[in-house]
Image 1: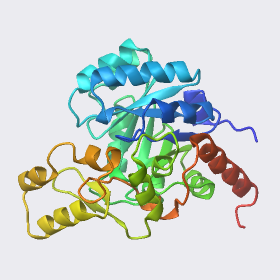
Image 2: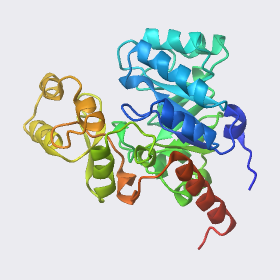
Image 3: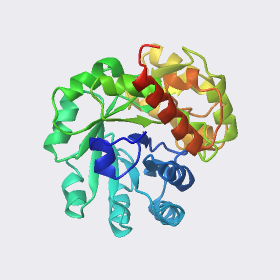
Length: 314
């Protein structure tokens, strides 16, 4: 089935399927595999030093001749160095998140880089469009990782964002199947960003214990946490319970930061500490049951989407 819309044309890809740039999970192997399969692979720079990011970009360029991008969470350190690395290495697509879209959009666009910003509300979507972004990701409350304080679900957020911007909208949060992709596009999205499903890909750099924990997750096994810091959806474990108890006791942001400490996400998602690590994952983990090659995941989503498009009421 041939397909063309504003997202496939913007990025020069076959399918409007974007792999999320997740920390400790989305290295060059995953990005290249998704891009080679017809989607848009994204390197997650949030867990990388600038020299490591440079290496991943160079390895991704060697592994695919298809478009790929880099995700830059603006709340992390080394962001200026990351931006310069991206420019120096000739990356053509950047997804920014967790910060002000005005910070780097103009600079990136001066270097002919397409810029997409992740938002959790229609207000922030309008700001991203006004800042000159080429598209926005409307990330609903169901999503894993850093999330919006508004707790707006994808079902509400997608049409709300679509109503206030004239640039393409990419839906994220709670999407792992072709039917969910079709639902998001019926609501006004031109494409989807998929994170949790790609955590359970063979190419994802997440620890196998984390992947297996995602496979075992059921409905209700994730919850938004640490809203006094930066809200993040976590898989429930010992660390989550400690945070929850601290929050119920009225812990300050400073106390929560002390509890979080350093490298907590690396400890969980990359090193495999399922008890005390920070395990960022979305609600749709309840629907993920297999670890597969990224290409098979892209193909499976697209095949189900195409079938549902032809017969949506079945």
